[in-house]
Image 1 (cartoon, rainbow, N blue to C red):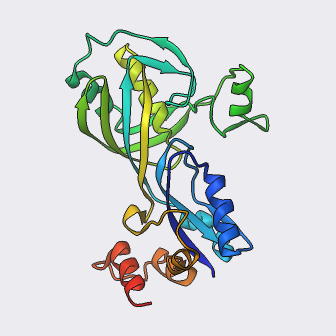
Image 2 (cartoon, rainbow, N blue to C red):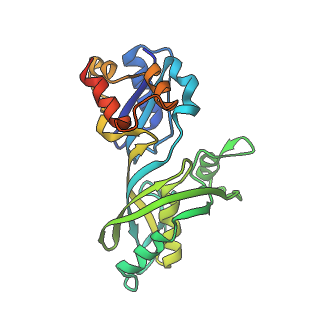
Length: 249
């Protein structure tokens, strides 16, 4: 039982919660994940099972795709809906075209400062532990890349968009920065990861599925390595290969 299990993480669970449950239900010796999702976020959370954990770096490559909703008019200390409101603004002077222009402006390679409420470490201490004590420290900006940004729906003060971005991008920071640029504040209200590298929602399962279904949906390590090495026919693609493997078990 070595491979990857793609979980559709529900809201309210930490990524660690999902890992612990999978480890217990499957009786696995080792379970990890390929990129944290915050408790408020939902969507694709790939788990590496047993020997697959050794190949986490190989398997976690590729861009991430998110569908997010931001809300204008407030700034929050965590940059998302879980946090404390620190400032409110009037939004009457901000139009839909303004929001779309600012979001599109994030496309390309940009510098992003990690939020204080994050797992990034400063002198060995996670920033979120400092933030919970009311301590703010300087953070080095990191280069990320936003490959595409598409506005899906605008119903001010809320805006829903799809972003395809590099590993390490904080979507809640994009929302916060958009609010600052617009001058009216903004925070991340909802977030769903729809793709993580080659892993997509259409083959994901909920973490509370029966043990049998979870085992059935583990993608064998050998198949993953073959695919990562380019051994899958190009016209079939990752999703086709994956669905085909499920149908023929």
